[in-house]
Length: 426
Image (tube, rainbow, N blue to C red; front, side):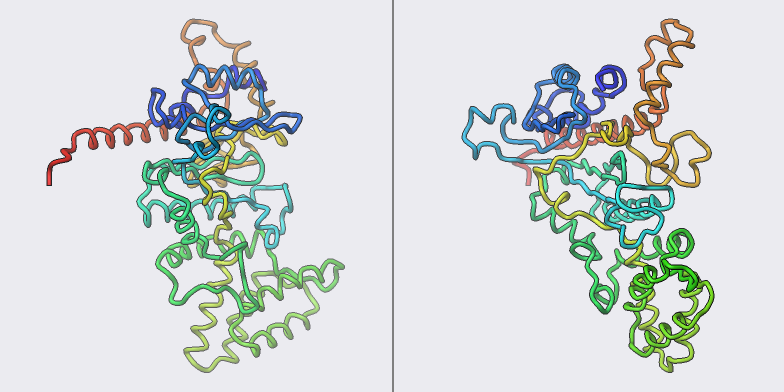
């Protein structure tokens, strides 16, 4: 890890991002950084005066990872010399966390800490929905998505207006986004989503509908049943989940009767088509047809809408892994990524956008750097190339650098407007 910190971690960009300036500001000097060590020891309330002190401290501490926290009224490292109430958080990026373990009840390809390209599609859809909402409904502009290193993604919103939100305002935003309800609530009669659907839900639904056949009916196939296998009984729990969304008991009973009576394999696609086929025989009014349409919408929303951890977003003091940290369990680098396109430069990843299974890994990066420097030209231009530019980390650092540049430019414009404003002008 020490070599990674010395050569590959882009400290300057992380410093500028947390300072919102190329120079040290209170947003950096009053900000908490926390370390986690191999021994599982955890050291909080570190703070630094500038980039050099920050870099030297991390290299010296050599933690398995470091986390970024809130900006306080005083430097966190001074807390022992001050009254407890003096250490009050004043700002922090608004953050969102999508973790694939929250999809365990619906994903069939993996469970627990395992992930693959199939279940990563849940995060593809979720990140697009969250980003569109934050940009269109709340007007935020400076968002960056970061791979958690194992099974999730974090969204950091760095707009000044977002950083200065209090906890009640943060809760309001995340609850606006939390369409499924606390811990992804669903009653015995489907989702409790108000009708008609909110414009945000309708817009999100269009994104989900486009991917539903591919992700749910084909990749996950959660309602697949085969009467000739022992595991068939496990799949019926998911089938009953689907039936619970149906708008009346008669339709539920007829569908259950058909599916339980089948003596051949029945896929999720088959069952999805059966909803309309059976309903056409039973329903006589437009109201009944409309209720089925709403029920099918709710199924799509339940299976594909992003599942969020409210407390991660609400709490200003919540700590989150820094971009470009290495996940201690996997060795994967927590790289920023574009949720809508592949930036790795590897053509085979184009179908996935960001592909977590081919994301930069510590061992891989060290090998790439060693190969480059052993076979490089050795001239001055080559020596001056940043180490990360010699590895597959380059496109991710470039993405982050662009994000930071846009953020700092916006901050400078805001400061100039504030300086130019006349307090006596009405």
